[in-house]
Length: 269
Image (cartoon, rainbow, N blue to C red; front, side, top):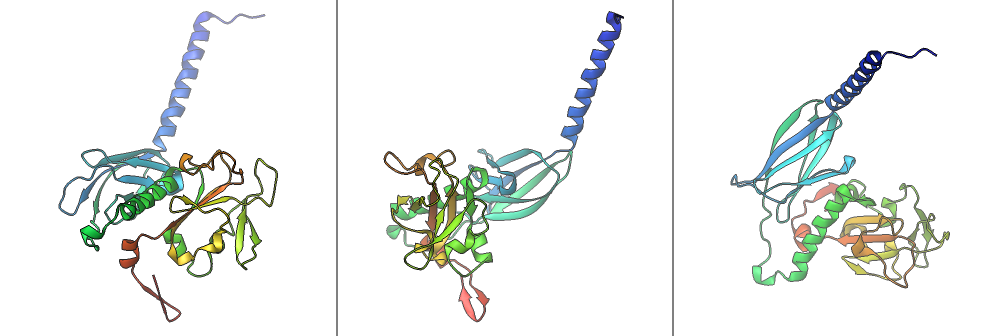
């Protein structure tokens, strides 16, 4: 057996390390980043604004100076969303360039108060916060989500019509003529087990998904099992493990500020 000199071994090891380092550098060069600052219309920085890319499940928040950073992004066009309670949501398409760190400036417009301050209840404030939590989970969560934008794109029909094409979802006819959702791949091995439905943070036992009007919804969340269900929607002792559906109704101020569009002679929000 021929024994290689120690010097040759060291040279080979150094070469291997160099190749690995080169590969890592090359991989980093194929990634990009988005950095920026979020301000209000008066130029003041907005802290704790959610900045996310839903398609990539990436979410961050602005700091006290309104700055944010999303790193290690694949090159290409991405849909960036910026949201903050009491401000109109901001959406834009951004091109991520490999090896680049684009700097963005985002201005959020405050939502005007439509209700007399004395009439704004704690429940209404909490409902607005719940909607922001929904969009936060949609960006970084483990479930499946249907936003208001998607509902408006496919206007008409029932909530069940929005989820027919979602993998792993089965629809069954109910006694009322609508449809109910079943997640066949449950730990119980049952195909007829109904998921627990929540509406605006409250359990609604026995309700099926078509029991609420599609036009009244701001968003829908679907979780096929307990491993992906957020803690606040865990079903508790004595409940089944057939999945969870969470539906959020539109807050009053969203309904009052809704823009109407013409479709087939009707005015649709």
